Each structure stands twice: as structure tokens, then as C-alpha cells.
Image (cartoon, rainbow, N blue to C red):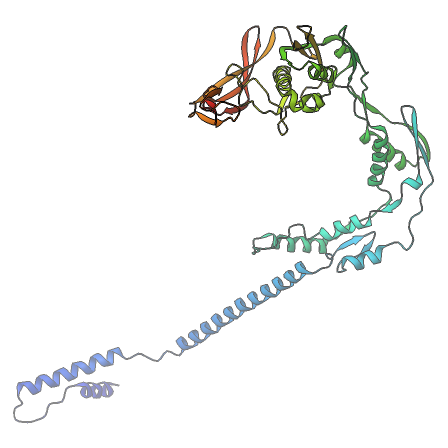
Length: 503
């Protein structure tokens, strides 16, 4: 052992050549090479076979994990694919039974064919006498076919597993996953449905509707029939209450008796009375004069046209909601040869009707009207009319009479009265004109008149300013204004002087 150590020491010892003397540089280079050899020996890795084994096992483990992850993803994809196919399948969900038959996996048509009865159910004979007041209607099995609600039950079965269906935007967190979960629950736990055979409430409702069409009636308001002009005495018709069959109550009673198996019964149907809005007693007590208008007539050729217009208007009855035409009321008395007096009748009706509560439908102003009556007049012509609507719930009546002012019948006075439901005490109405814009008169207008002497002139029309005027209905209670409404607006064009001159 000692010999071996001595030999190793001798081997490791530096070797010097026995030359006489070496340069210092050579000695330093040998020392450097010796140090470098020792450093390289210290860095040399020893042999370790266990390290490579651990590295190999780790790589295999990582590969196994990757394979498991890929297999899991493929399994989830396959499960999703099956769920997606089941979600889009046109078949009933697995686990659903109808009337004890498993219909899961069937299409709707095949399930109906499987469950449909080969023969229609037989109707049970019955007779129900339905009494409505003094009338009786008989209902038998011929009025109610027996049927099955199998189609409705199949609709319910079809909706199972589809109630959360969305058309777009499905993700793993969307209702798609909820539907898949619901189908899995149905397949595991099952869901049983049953159909029923019997009478359909819809058919009962149809029968009751037909009965109600014969029973129901709207209330009839009292109406003005005639009037005694000399005594101002009016005759009214009776009001008739309306009837409405209690449909819901009758349907429930019929269904209850059918469910109880009753085959013979008398059923008293209830009706609801609806009183008329306008009673005869109300009209008789508070029907009176609402508005009065007086105007003078100018009839150089006689008052025949005026008397004809008075006769046409007197006693005119305007029912609730009806629209009347002044030209229609006057008839032939509104002809062109009586235009001046026809406008006076229309003006009186325009003012009295609006103040009595009627609604304006059509009105034409008289362009050449005097400034004092602008906005308060109405004009009748071949294309222009005055139309008013009775917007109240009660009828209106027009009374009209004529008083001659001379024996020749060239002058007279007409009184127009409108009768209806009297207003509350202290309430009045007034039609006023409100000028909103003035239009200055135009330049003079000259016209040749061959009947005049040459060089002479004749003033046919004075100049007048034009205006834009609102017709306003003012309502008052005990002299205090409580409403002011613009009824219509008219523009009166400015007119220059009209001068005729000889040829």
C-alpha cells in the first residue's frame, strides 16, 4: 500500500528536464499547463446512470397525461355531438309515456298513430233546458261532439326537452346545456302524461255564444217622436234597457253538470240589465229651449221662399250622433234666388247650434260679409254648405216660425229655437269673433257697363279691409268664463272699390 502511494506521488510530481538551465518563460508555460490540467480534471462529470432513468420516466408520464387530456376532450366532443343530435332530432324525448305507452324516440305523427283510438268515443245522451227570461233553449248531445284532448297532450309531450330552445347564440353555458340536462333527467326519471275523452269547453262556449247572440240586446234611449208647436209640447218614446247573458256563469254550470254525469236538467241562465243612457222621464222633465235666434228677412218679390224655409226647418229632429246639412234641411228654399235669406237662416243655425253644444263639421264664410258679423255668419252656395253634428247623448229639436212685418210680405222676422236637455242654472254660451290679422284694402277695380252713358261712372262697391278671424265659443257660469274654444278660422280677402264706367 505504501509502495503504491509513493508511486502515485511520484507520478503526479512535475518532471523537469535535466538541461543545464531553462529560460523563465519556458518554466512559466509548463506551470500554466499543469494548472489547466488540474482544472479540467476537477470539472469532469462522474458517471450517474439513475439520472437518465428518471428523465425517461418523467417524459413517459408527461406523454401519458397529454394522451389522457386529448382522450377526455374527444370524449366530451363526442358527448356534445350526441347531445346536439338529440337536441335537433324530430322525435319525442326518451322516458316520456302517454297513456302508458312509451313514445320516446317516436316522431309526433307515429306517436299519434300509435295512441289514436280506432273508433270515436260514443256520446252520452242528455237534455238540458236553458231558461233565459221567458225563452227556453234545449241543448242535447247533438250540440256537443265528444272528443279527446290527445293532440293537446301530444303537444305537451313534444315540448318536453324543447322549452328552452334558442335559435342562435348557443354556448356551453346557454340553455342548450339546460335542455340536455332536462333530457337526461327525463330519460332517468321518466314523465307520464294521460289524455282524456269528453266534452270540449270550446264547444260549450260556441253554443253559449250562439245563444247570447239571440238574447243580448243594446239599450235603447228614449227619443223625441213629435212636438206640438203651439203648446211647445213634446212626445218621447220609452227607453228600453239592454240585456247581456252571463256567458261565463252559464258555461261553468253546463260544464259542471256534464262532469257530474247529469243527463236531464233545467238551467236558469242569468242576465245583466243595462239601463239606457237617456230615459223618457229625464227627457220629459228637463227637455227645453237652449238657444233662440231672431233675424229680419228681405223679400222684395214676396215671402214665399221664407215661409217654405220656415216650414222645412220647423220640427226637425236631430238624433244623438247625427250630422245635419243646412241645405238638406232647407231643400228647395235654399235655391240661388233666395240666397240672401238662405244665408240668414244658415247664420242663425250656425250660432244657435254651436251654442247648443253641436259640433261644427263644415262651414263657409261669406267673403262680402259686413265687418260687424264677420266670423259669426255662414254661407250657402252650390258647393258650400253648413253641417253640424249633434254630439250630445240626447236628441235636439229645431222650432222655427215667421212673423210678417207688413201686409205686402216684403219684410218679416224669423225666430229659430233649438230644444234639448237644459243646462245647469247660470250656464250660458256665446259665439264671438276674434280678429288676429288685418289685411289692407286693394287698389280700385274698374269695369265697363254698357248701360251707362259714355263718360259716366257708378260706384258699385266700397273698399274694405280684409282680416283673419277666429270664431270662438265662450262658455260662462254666472257670468264668469270657464272655457274659450276656437271653433274655426276664416280669411276675408281685402276688396278695393268697384267702379263701373260707361263705354
